[in-house]
Image (cartoon, rainbow, N blue to C red; front, side, top):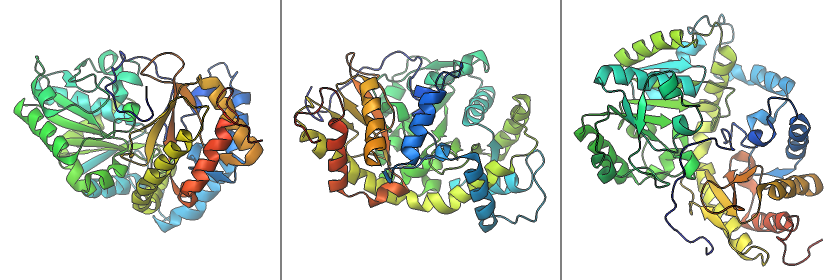
Length: 424
């Protein structure tokens, strides 16, 4: 395998994934340290201490903060986006309803409904569309979130079944949609496709895929958990992108640094039905004002910054590639996609995940610089290949290409067998 060589990679069958929701508002390292028996607490605390103590880092996750910090910041800032003299929300009115109106307008839909989780929002959307189309089959990628991260909930809870237009690590093409040999009622497209490397099609390709689904008499739903940062790649406004689909789900904690929550946007009749199913699923929450206020803050503050994050991610990715290419102890590597399609991308190295994790933590503890967080066994390729997800947000904007290359050298100096020359 050569440095950065593009190649076709087979997709493994859907199964457990070692990562969790990773982005500017969520921490992919959580999977490494989160265990039901509590045995990962020491590891998690060490990781958080190292990352919080770093003077330099590419991004700051909202889950890095302490309870008091988050509550204090929310109380101090929320008045800038909503009248805090209003009464708290009850079962979705007040500030929650205002958030729904704001997102519906941003995405160009007549209505929207707030959900406590994106998993619930998306399952409800697909269930509603199945009832309306009369077809319970959903076409989606085998690496899409419902297939990899939701424990088979589409089938177990919603009674839906899935088909896969492609197994390549990218979004399906129009020809692949037309080539499905059985009818489907809904095409679900995850934009970007996170587990394939936060990848996106070109705009014309996306339009053709949607048109192909229409030819098959199917509706189109976008898993837009990270739709917010897709606009620079497509060169289109959010409402134009969302307008290709019949419904869209968006998340608030991944890229907008919100506490939690999601919105499903679509036609008024669909959203009304989704509210009924939200109640049945247990999502009719009594009070949700902290999540709603933090979402409004994300829309106000983080959304306008995302184009800058996307642009600088390209600089960081190029510098990472240059730095790794300079390392004699690195037989090969891959930065994927290159250049990044959003402000997130993957890096692959031919080392086991555990020593890479340890190297990253030691670098943070010893130098005050966090370059990489969590490494996990790569989904593609032979054993001994690991991948990490890199996010660039506000803290990363100050990093120059030289800063990145220097951090790469310090990181590889701490990887057993990875440093070709001593730097310490």
